[in-house]
Image (cartoon, rainbow, N blue to C red):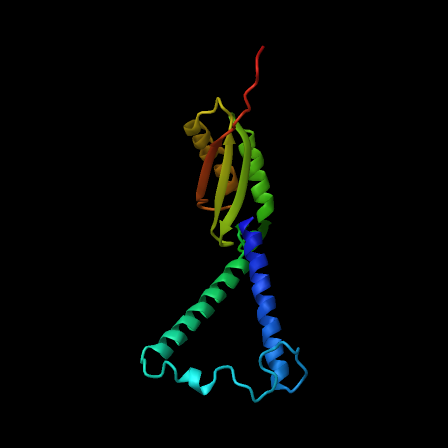
Length: 192
């Protein structure tokens, strides 16, 4: 949900900036602009001389404005790059032992790891996401535990069985994992 809101807000901000930039460019090239646009000719200025020199006596004003604008630009670029970054690992490099590597799809390993984790006693559902680099992946695992499950036992079996099999099958020396455990919430049943 938050990712969708971020992308929608980023798209709207980009569209507004594109429209404003296009209108300013149209004025600069002498093309027609809407009647409501405040600057109609290319000789109009954004800040008048009196407004530019209003804070001229204050030595801190223009450096503060420039620093604030630079900070806004850096935050916008950081936000854009955060939206473009993939949250999941698309593929993993597997050492095939013959000096050449192979590529394993990240979704395939996620699906196999989740399927094996769901077969563990006491695990109702498992979700797995691979993160990190192609050569050094890490796993984020969310386990939904049945009411009778013991969290320590489920976590130990996940580590010794499911994660170990995934690590061995991908030829990885280590596969660090962040595991989140939640309990199933059953609705109360009325007994008459």
